[in-house]
Length: 297
Image (cartoon, rainbow, N blue to C red):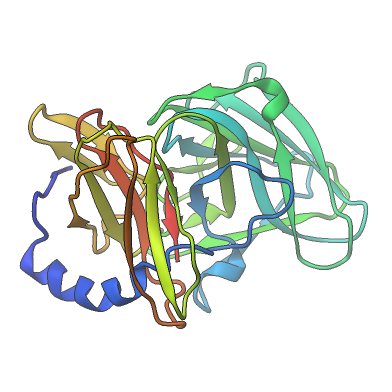
């Protein structure tokens, strides 16, 4: 746990001088499919989003294997759903469920459904959970269950030894932690309420990191890191512990501006076209300690 920095440490400032020329491309980590209308919240990267040699494949096929991924909400709202990157043949299916609380969960899920491959290629499948009206507050723990149906589907994700820094919360298999190196790729989406971060523009031109839903005329902090994760920081005062959606790798505060009377603020810059894959961004409302969704390059 770290004390919330009011100013970036000198070494991190130097690292962020390079990153800041890139960070405001914090937009299109993956294209949002037509299934989602809300805000990208948590990101455990797919195989297609990590460097070569750090991708992984996970057995979504075998019916006696049950995966449970731990997730912490990064914003207030309703869970719209979770998206996976999968491989396999057309028609292959996998069972998905949502539980409140951290793994291991063995009771009745708050939502369950079946995802089906629509082609023989690698594709993104979205589990739409809006009908369950799963209301979450920033920091709430929930569990995503994945269980196969013996029809040949596999999921993608990341591997990093000795500890996976792409995404912090644990992955479980069959009631035991599946080691610190492995993470199933998943993107979660939220709708309604809370602090929101959006990114108009595109790399190669001007981009804005636009915040809405902040305390009117209150201070906000833009946090930057080189990956997603679950890094905890203490905000002095009042000393509340914030569990961010960012990794500890390169985490720093880039700016602490004041929102306008409507609770909005826009931080912008010209961003080079090669900015992808380096920096993730999250915003903190310093009066309410509310956290926005995480946006990655």
